[in-house]
Structure formats: structure tokens, C-alpha cells
Picture 1 (cartoon, rainbow, N blue to C red):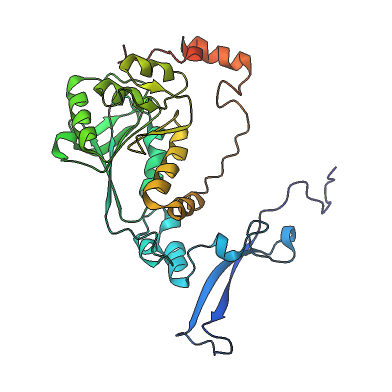
Picture 2 (picture 1 turned 180 degrees about the vertical axis):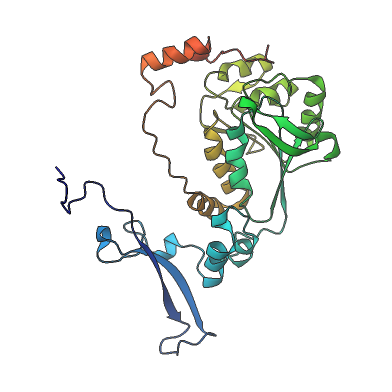
Length: 326
């Protein structure tokens, strides 16, 4: 028990982070001149939680394993150049120690937007994709301009789908109302772009939009658990996983809503390398620890599943109805 005035803390105080540089002369005995020194910026916890002030690394791993971006220039680009401030970090791509984060070919990603879409379905992936090296992210809707998402959130300004010739990665997010992207004009544009895209992807029930175009026929795909079995109605193969890929990664899909973050990190690792994905995960502090184990029917209490099934009839069978879907 903690009494008033006691110095006992039931909850550890947050660490006070200090930085220090560890210098490594190019050769033993060399002077530490600017020409022959490279350093690693190490974050240490100097609070009472870590009296020794040891580097904040996982047990059993070296600093080099944890800070894979090596040089002061690289970490300066990260810490001072914008990654932690929500900006892209092209400098990082050019200063990686092994060149793995500096691919020669740019990566173009197109996210399809529409009225009734769910913000988090594409906001999570967008946060990750924008931080990848040499990557360009665009947003498009049928007529361009603003779109009104679920809950009245207005997003824009988007480009016109017809004005985009092709893309490397096509991402179709899901929504609470799929009436718009199921329209013939939307379907035609999505099908056109999917046919030439190197990677055709979706998050949540956006896979239903793709499946309706016919491009997922015979392909394995994820979807939100409440709608996943409706994929079969369009000839796709439903897989109730958080991330699914088919045809050597040409088709990649994520489960419902928040699964889009996991999906995007996997896409990032596949297209830009594991280090780029791990770097991005750390920068956005993606370290999920939900307070309840109710994020999927297999974990949720039966009464909670029943509540959702009442709100979305057929959800427990993966066959919930949604506007725009037959």
C-alpha cells in the first residue's frame, strides 16, 4: 500500500531519456578526429528505474542489432529530420549502412478513397507507407476532390482515378457503406488499375470491393471477420487471418480495420526490406497492448459476440450484410 507522503511508487516512473555518443576510432590507437570517427546515438534511461543508465536495448541483443542504422548522419536524419515529427525521411534511405534501404526504383502506392469509407482502414497503412524510402503515396476517388468517410469525416483532396495511368501498389480500404465503390464506374477504374499493378491489396472489407471486380477469383484473401465468408460469393477464397498473401505477394490483404497496420508493416517488409519496416514500427511506437482480449470472436466473451451479432446479423458466420454488397 502506498501512503500519502511515502516515497514508494506502485507504478514505475517513465524513464528520463538522455543521449550519449559512443565513439569508435577507425583503427586502434587512432585519435578521435572528425575524419575517422563514427558514432552511435544511444538512448539511456537514467531514472531510478534503471540506476545503471544502461542503453535501452532488449536483453541479449547488442546495440548494433538494435540500432541498425549505425551512423550519426543517419540517426541525425531520423531524430532531427522529421520522422518523429510525422514527415517522410528520404535521408534515411540514402544513409543506411548496407544500402538495403535505398532501392533504385521508386515505389508508387495508390489508395482508393470513396464516400462511406473507414478512416483507420487507410490512415494506418498511410502512416507507414509515407515513411518508406523512395515511396510515393497518392489518393484517388472516382471524381476527385473531397470524400465523406464514415462518421462524416471529410477527407481530400483526392485525385481522379481516371487520371492515373498505373501504380505499383493498389490499396482498396474498407468501409461501413460500400455502395460507392461497388458502382460500375468505380469498379471499372479499380479493375483497370488492378490489372496492371504489381501488387493488388486491400484492408478490411475492401477485399469485397476488389473481389466484385473479378480480380480475386480463385485467390486467397483476408477480410473483416464479420464479412469474410462473403468473399466466396465473388469467387475468392476466404481466409480468416490478419494478413494473407497469394501469388507470391501480388495479392496481399489485411483483416478488419486495425489489422491494416499489421498489413502495412508486412507490405513494407516485403517491398522495402525488414529494416525499413522495423524502423517505421519503432518510429510510430506500434507496440499494441489492448486492455481487453476481445478483438476477435475466438477471444471475445460469448455475450460480447452476441452483442455484435445483434448489431450486424450474420457476423458470427462471417456473412454480415453491408450496404452495397449483395
